[in-house]
Length: 129
Image (cartoon, rainbow, N blue to C red; front, side, top):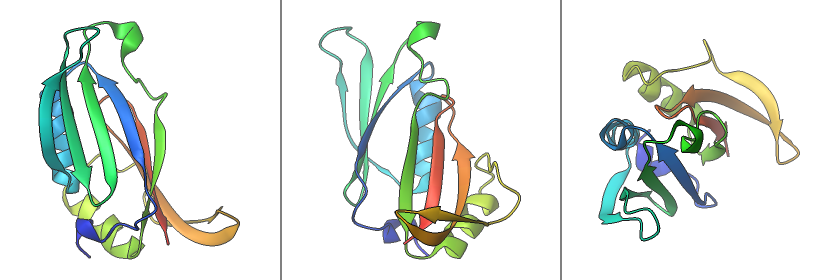
């Protein structure tokens, strides 16, 4: 399993975070590439755009505790090799929330899944395709 083997039906997400560098390092460890850096035009805050396949994540730094994602962001990444993704993420110590793969239902079909928590409190669920 390579982290570039994500399923093509994933989308894009915006995450506000107190530590842009920590969040960027977390996502690059998951396999994302930095696509660009910029500044948010309305707040003048630094911004990093990351990508993996067709998944896009926009990280926006904020010093306001009220603006930090803090667990309110939850998204799902569909993978073709869920066991490989789980092993990779566990081997990298990326805040695994589940002790093992779990069975569940996703898009109306039985699936295997696990979750991690990102540095801004965001919940990232990985689900078998």
